[in-house]
Image (cartoon, rainbow over all chains, first blue to last red; front, side):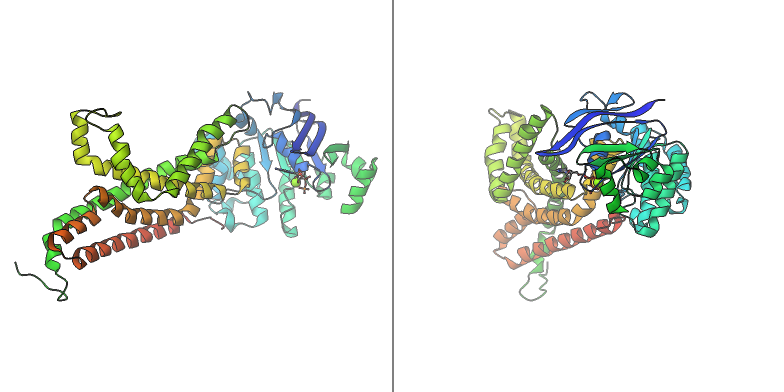
Length: 243
Length: 255
Ligand SMILES: Nc1ncnc2c1ncn2[C@@H]1O[C@H](COP(=O)(O)OP(=O)(O)OP(=O)(O)O)[C@@H](O)[C@H]1O
Ligand SMILES: [Mg+2]
């Protein structure tokens, strides 16, 4: 049972504002963990600390035993092991879909271009967008852009994928296509940490759900435990607000 | 040779007589402008990046502030806050002799210095002054262009494992460059026109040629109107080239 990520006493302040107040958790290989919680509770900040996009104020984050926030750590190498998918896609608008996907493998890993392209085609088949291979991001719908963003992250063959509200910027009719790609990934054994309020997805796919409020992990358990029999009052209140 | 009188008052024969000199002047103007656009862009990129340099940990943090941001800010402020004409005079008559001087030049001295100064003095100072000046303006264009790129682009690139330098070259600068093309084009046009100021230190470019011709004949319409049209044609050409570039590189930009 190998651990992909281990978080120990993670804290994060923005000036006076304490956003994360001591978080401990770990994610095992092939596990799918959903993080839920009210707006402003620190979910995005938490995910961003995991791959070093944010500096931690205290505590540690270990990815395969390597400390993310150590000065001696090669963050670039570490980040290439951690895929991240953003709420607002963040595709590179000046590149075609193909170039978006091959950029990191060729530049960071030194994969030969032809091989990277072959792999990109395979990934586009997987997310159902092979016909858009030469399109530019602004020619795609939101759901299509997000699926390309997932393919782009997968091209680095990461050990874990982080998703920060991947469907909340999408029109409702496009949510399903993105979630089903994510579900396929989970079924293939990808380790995933997903910030999302898609309860249906969490119930179907997640092994564990974390409820975060005001920078602390209030409660964790299986989807059934959290959604059907929450122990904490704060969890109950949050769930009754969003359902 | 029969004088050709085009409009009665416009003595085109004067222009024809000095045709070779105007042609040389035109070439010099184009040469100086081209060199300064290229060097100014390189310098502007370096200074623009220096003005944005920052780091999370000391001592890199202090290095960025005191050795990069602070000097580059002063540099830009000086060259934007003083007249180009004064900068040209300062560099030609004060700075250059300090470095290239037959007696005690810091960089070059002796006979080489004498001939260099005599033959290329105005050329070197002119290019130096114009490069330094346009570098200051271009750095502001780079800075604004880089800052206009959404933070999410940088985060996406870094989270794929691309280093800061690779993120700049593959993600930020190509996008910033598209947005910078119009102001860079305006800057190139300004540079072309400003190159006429170098005539004051005796570089034989277009404006200097016109002045020479005007002095020889005490005729002013012919030489100055002629070079006006030459400058005008050049600026129109530049504007056209920038438009072409914009059309070519504008793909995929959503803004
Ligand atoms: N760069 C920053 N500087 C200052 N404060 C910040 C910064 N980033 C986030 N915050 C603050 O940290 C708190 C937590 O933000 P975060 O984005 O992590 O919340 P969240 O749980 O993801 O919320 P949401 O569901 O709205 O996305 C908020 O109060 C936010 O204003
Ligand atoms: Mg968030």
